[in-house]
Image (cartoon, rainbow, N blue to C red; front, side, top):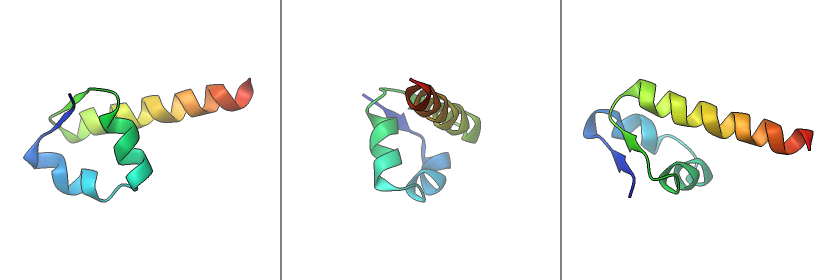
Length: 53
């Protein structure tokens, strides 16, 4: 189950519903803005790999 710390919840809530769902589906723990950026970066990289196939 994913967790988003109160310290970054405001930033998380600015994302689109689709992005929030993609993040929460990963069962990650987001405690800092850097954690959030890392998860978003992973999502982008995966999308780019899918486009290349």
